[in-house]
Each structure stands twice: as structure tokens, then as C-alpha cells.
Image (cartoon, rainbow, N blue to C red; front, side, top):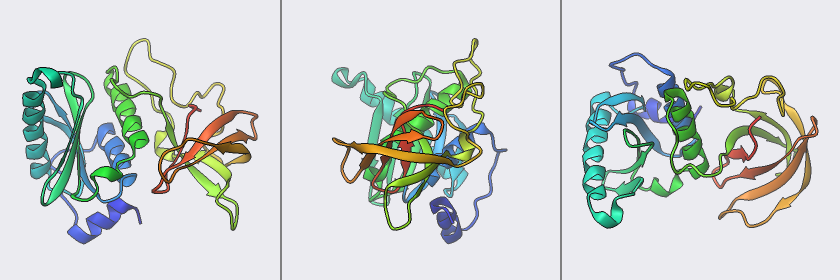
Length: 241
């Protein structure tokens, strides 16, 4: 069972007050990748929720999103903080992370109060990229993109043996015209997203983050890329398929 599924089982199912969209699927993938996450909501500059996911009551999600839009607006009115793009707050009951996507839209992540430091920067940036691609926005402050994958390790060893993309990411397209290259190039794929791809470990990558492991790998297609295992077990590659 996923982490998000475990939260829903403990707290009970939450009845949605609007139909799911592509945005709710993207937000749910972020929650699944984030330990002790409780909810996520996409909100516009007026405080209106576009869509959401998670085990938090929809009304509470929307109120929190509107509130933190006001907080961020007040923070950015302070001249030294005029370009602030992210806000993290740890309260007595929960933690909150607000990430601005552009001037009009933001993403609010609601977490357990001790989980604010557990958010994967790569997963968060990938979520921002996916939302912006779906909405036709230009992502800001994303940096070098990373792409989440599934990895199967060799028995009795933590070195990767096989790799494939997370299924939710297959076929992502943008509404922008002309559209940018898809995350999964269906004409000349680096690897096949529908099957496991064998991995040859060329060497270790040094200088990774705390409790991370990095590998330089070669796939059975001949493509080479960097593979990172984060401290909570998420795997990412630095090349789009």
C-alpha cells in the first residue's frame, strides 16, 4: 500500500467536492512520493483552488491554500523578499510548504509537522514541471530536471539491475503551441517505458546529497545517464526518455 493509501486508511476516505482532473493525478503522485504527506492543492493568485489531492478535507485544503496565498503576498511586499518563491512553515499540528509556479499559480503541500524536511526536491520540481506543462505555463526556479523511475536492484546488492519510468508519466504532453518535446519521446525513446530495461553500472557518482547514492549507468539501448537514489528510496534519472 502506498504512503497516501495508508493515510487514507487511518483517516478514512475523503469525499471530493469536484471531479478529478489531470492536476489531481499529478498532485497524488507527489503525495505518494512524499513521506507523511497529507494533502496538496493547486491554487491561483486569488486564492481559488484549481484542484487538489490527499486525505485532508477539501474545505480545509482550500482554506489553507487561500490563507497561504495571502501570507506569501504579504511576504513579497517586503522589498528584500520580493522575489521569494517558496515558503515552509512548521506549526504545532502540521507543516506547510508553498511553492509558487509563476505569478498566478502556487502549489501548497500539507505535511505532518515533522515532515517538512522530507520533501524530495527532485519530486517537487518534477511536479512543478508537469503542472506547468499541463497548464501551458513556463516553470520558474525548477533548475535541472529529474525524472522519477522505478528501479529493481540485484539480489543481495543495492546496485540497480533494471529500470523503467513511473507509469503515470507516460504520454505527458503540453497544451502550449508549439508544444515542447514530450517527457517521453515516442519517436526515438531512450528506453521503453512499457518494459523493464537492463542496466549496466559504469561507475559511482560522487558529491551526491546526504544519504544519497549515485550511479552512472548504461541501458541496453546504449543510452547513458546518471541515476540517483534518494534517502527515502526514490530513484531519479537526469535524462528525459
